[in-house]
Image (cartoon, rainbow, N blue to C red; front, top):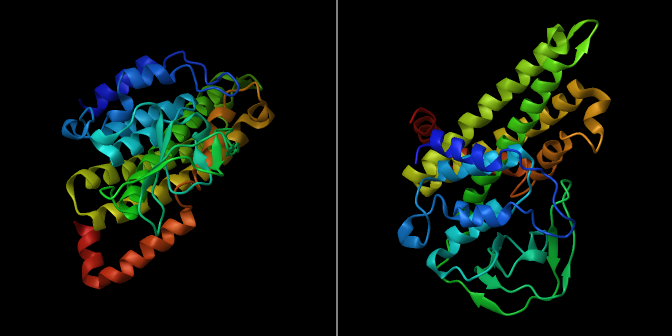
Length: 315
């Protein structure tokens, strides 16, 4: 399925869906996404997936984020990729530890891929401390885990982190698109002194700057997704770092500009803008901050040396 068709399908599914969800429950849209097989996209059919590319999955995650809806699509797709056909029934999410576990209160199993330990599958029991990120999404702590199962065949931590970084960058890109679309609509429709806000030079410049950041993030995410499908793990890790850094910077710039151009209206709970800007603030530090990934990219450049770095940049 082409990316354009993926985008059309996502737009059709998400059209008219409210970002609001019942308190303490998963969004009503989630069962539909599971039934459509979205968490299995980007995973080969022989490994229990639905086929397609990582770029297809990135587009679905971006489209969902742009709508403002909060669902565990990234985390379940990552768990599916790690486990393949060994995926147990129910909601299964992936995490890098037992703290700040996405959606743990709703999960039947959590795939844990720690940095210096072997991966394992855990069943959260009733002793889950509820927490949340800035977007109000569950980020829980599993105090006393239930039954655990070692996963000796799971991908290495760096490989899991690299894939998660690409998908996180895609989510940031989607939320940034959502903020841009809402801002463009606002400055085009709202008038001041008898003309739309976008007619003001400062407003038009701000909107153009937002668009420039979006283009950079789109290119970085698309490149990283393609390299993950076609190239070595080393190049994939570097591409993930670049996508994550670019998307995090885009998140910071676009969230700031969106609220500036909306003025006081953009900070109200009744306005839809906060459904995407709070995600930009929350997600930009998940799966590694911009600073951490910048350091990782710097170490990779030093390790490659002058010749290796040049080949990487010109490949």
